[in-house]
Image 1 (cartoon, rainbow, N blue to C red):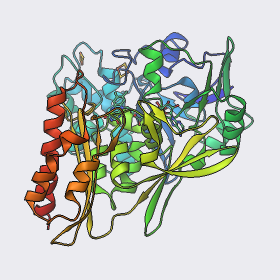
Image 2 (cartoon, rainbow, N blue to C red):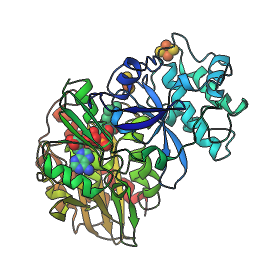
Image 3 (tube, protein in one colour):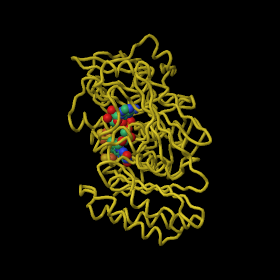
Image 4 (tube, rainbow, N blue to C red):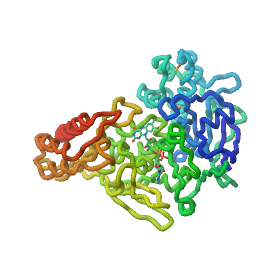
Length: 478
Ligand SMILES: Cc1cc2nc3c(=O)[nH]c(=O)nc-3n(C[C@H](O)[C@H](O)[C@H](O)COP(=O)(O)OP(=O)(O)OC[C@H]3O[C@@H](n4cnc5c(N)ncnc54)[C@H](O)[C@@H]3O)c2cc1C
Ligand code: FES
Ligand code: FES
């Protein structure tokens, strides 16, 4: 059985197909029809709902997520609010009232999703006693919401106006007298979380030892992290998984530790959570993370999922290559560490053995002589997959390039180093001409494919130019 709170009411479910998404459940079983299915792939935001939980600092917060790709089973122990739960008696929530007054809705298809995304912003900023938000804050909050008819100006006006209305009572999105106080321990008490229907199972282990036992018993079970890759296999490729193991309740997989030399990130740290952790040591990495998917995707998607998925166009693996990251893999047999460059064996093939999972990613911090440069080339700024991603760590002493690590995504069947380019930079004078010469090696390092995102020639030209751009930025930053 799983237990969660939906718009102020306790809900317990056990006999539901583990492959059901939250959106399917809300619309089919609860007849809550405000959240819509547009793309069923995390792109349009029409399905956005609010999920409340404690953040890593122990404060309660709401996040907007895509209900179309998140599994119902991932709600165990959480507090869910849909726009049906926002209104108190006849009083609209400030975000809803602002949308009405500023004419933020025409056909209304996108509106519940937009209201959910803005309500997360309103709630979390109200907790910090904020009374206004910037255009940038609104753009980030709405980066996963498409509106095809209203035009965004009136939606922006509504977002700016939302703090002008009376706030709901403290700590509540839904202001009803019946609202239950969030108490994750009470919600989970006495429940061994799982779903089972027609021979299909979903397990929600509470610890790594439980996870290891489950993986030893069911090595073919699908490990489910944020579901932003896997969810699409259900909704767009119509796959059905017989056994799913959700990692969302394992606290040790969310742990972040730091020493003077390295940062260790639990595999279940989401993109949104990683932003604050990485800000000081790797600001250019945070700028990349802000361009991964949308706010809704970053609230669900994990760093571990991006690495374990093994896609050649995942954005973070090239960065981890450039940083010389190590991966901690674990199973019932124990733990082992592996350099990320040894992790990928071929297209979507990794070194993970049966019963093994990714536990953590260890990032060595940069020395004062090193700098990290990251370039994501895609057709749109927000919510788009890279045609090419390049990450470079350049080390120099002002005269000579003493180390160079250049890694790319989108250029081969796996993320990988540009070995010849790196060799061409090593030990060369710290001058633009060295980067220009080294950039000629890109064509020897890679033979990329042509696909819907880019031609082979485009990818090669872009990557070559990015080596020169790295040189320009590196020299400019002296
Ligand atoms: C709309 C949209 C936009 C996107 N934009 C981007 C983008 O800009 N850049 C980008 O790189 N990606 C993007 N993605 C892809 C996706 O968000 C990322 O790859 C994400 O990091 C996957 O993480 P997850 O936690 O959701 O993984 P899941 O979907 O849960 O899992 C992905 C795979 O990894 C395995 N896995 C997950 N965690 C573990 C673990 N700890 N141990 C072993 N195996 C594990 C799963 O079994 C599965 O095979 C986008 C996806 C969507 C839907
Ligand atoms: S339906 Fe489009 S993001 Fe969910
Ligand atoms: S109001 Fe019609 S799509 Fe936004």
